[in-house]
Length: 137
Image 1 (cartoon, rainbow, N blue to C red):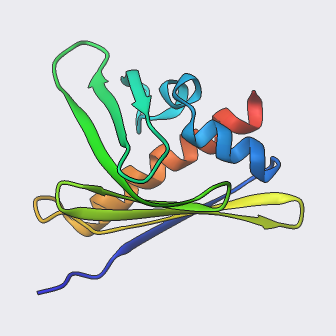
Image 2: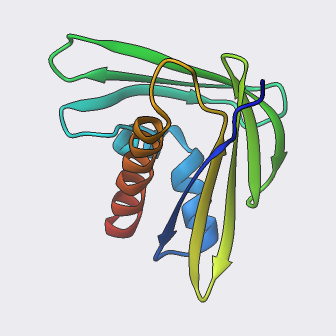
């Protein structure tokens, strides 16, 4: 039974190339890749090529919980979009210029353990954190 995909979006007040770089370069990913302030992303690696791996460590700052988000790139359109697979699920991230700003759209397959709304809120919180980081750096 196929589940409907979840889509989240943010309009970032920055040029598309900067938004792409901040979304894909490890030195930036560690600064924004968490949903709430009590968490952080202490390390990440990103091999931007088809078949390459993206691994981001996400954990509570107090060390009580953490996990590795581990994905493999399936498709990359440099500066435009990419799709990766993680745990049997797919996510696509698209970057579109809109009136001098950049719209980031993330569409992903939901998992089955948590409610759809909770998943949407979590991913949106991370994307909002990305927007804030990119616009202020």
